[in-house]
Length: 342
Ligand SMILES: [Zn+2]
Image (cartoon, rainbow, N blue to C red; front, side, top):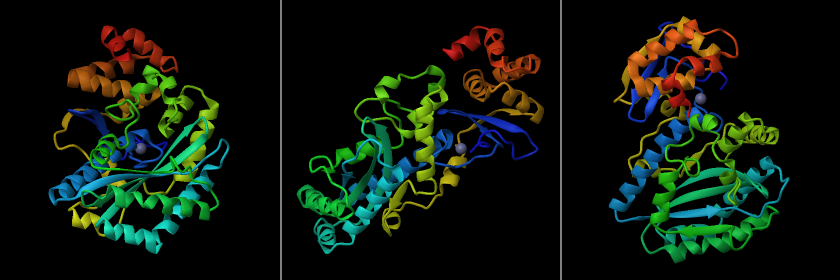
């Protein structure tokens, strides 16, 4: 991850591309970690969102309906995240193996499910939860509500207590579509997590609300010097490493015509509409890294194109090579720069 968007993997230098969504680099290492890297996560979840949206559209076209089910249990401050996640998966596995659960699936004519593991951290500590898209027939809300008692029993079996009111939830049609539209996006943000927020010092208060902070909100707070947030992010990072973000039940992708793509494929994906703005020599790239100016470079590329990047690099070459460089640049680059910074 430390090499992501930083280490160069060709001798040809680093290219900067521009799309309608913004500018990005090519020719640099891509880590492809959906849990740990905000840059890769944004690209991966965008790709996953397209897959989910496609699946829902196909299913509805075939006369089906997609339900959104949420599973969670009671949690307390100080509970260990690893234990929590383990219990959550175990309770789900136990419940899904029961005959009663399979009967509900049959009755609702379920052709498959997609499960997403998510976690936030709030006043009561870690809050891991599972959202599941259930591909069934219309009018099955009541049938699916029958899962509630099965979930409560499964949670008890693994030694935890389900909050009867909030431990299980099932909603029809629009909720599933709304969930998918927001999938992987930070609360209140239309375009997903972006480094811009680090600079903009987004309002942390909102994130401290009842729903708690997402891992990337914790990371952002850590970057701003919050040590407790840093510790929490590390705990999360270790527990989630290697886990799959989305789990499609067997055969569902085939049924709905969704092709298999790995996280890495998605993180490396280059938009066909990409326009090459500039190719940066290795020497210039070192200037960019030394001044910690990758974000600013992308902003310049996005707004001012090739000429902007050339002017920006020329400034960097002349900029003093100290950690004050960033500050210096801000002063030197003039109105264009301050516009970018604010
Ligand atoms: Zn990455």
